[in-house]
Image 1: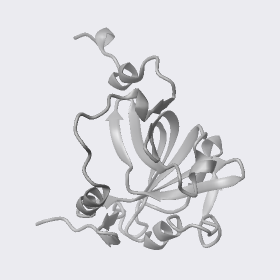
Image 2 (image 1 turned 120 degrees about the vertical axis):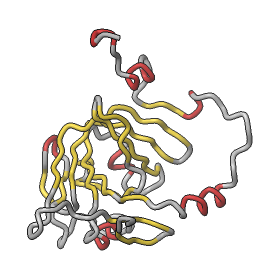
Image 3 (image 1 turned 180 degrees about the vertical axis):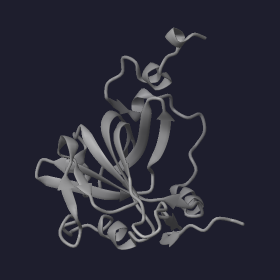
Image 4 (image 1 turned 90 degrees about the horizontal axis):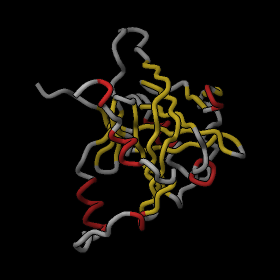
Length: 198
C-alpha cells in the first residue's frame, strides 16, 4: 500500500455521521447483558490510572476525575474518555469543543478526591490553574497535561464516550531527580502508587 492509499480508520468509521451518536444508532447486542453489580465488582479488580478532565464551561471552569482515559491511536493522536450524563460536570462540559486532560501523579491523591467530590469549588485554592489554549483550564498539577479538540461523542446509556484529537502535550519532570513522576493508581475504590515487578 502506498502512502497515498493510507486512510484514517477512525475517520472511515465515523464518515458521514453526526458528532453526536446515539446508542440506538448501533446494532443491539444479541445476548442479555451481565448484571451491572457484577460488572462493577469485576472492574474494581482492574488497576487504572487517573486523570482530571477540564473545560471552559458557560459559567466558568468545570472538571472531573476520570479513570476511563486511554489513547485510541497515535496517527492521528487521539484519546477517549467517558463522562456521566448525570454528573455534576456534564452540563458545563457536554458542548465544549476543547478539553484539558491532566494525567495524575502519585502525589495528586487529594486533587483526585477534590475533582470527584460534588458541591465544592473544584478550582479554588490550593488548586493552581490558568487559562490555556482555547480557554481550556490548565492545572499546574499532575505528571502530564494535554489539550485536545473534541471530535466525536457517542451517547451510551447514562454516559458520553468522547473521542478527542490531541493538540498539545506537556510532560512534567520531578524537580530533584529529572525523572518522570510516578502515576496515581486507582484500584478497588482506593488510590495507590505503582511499583514495577522485578
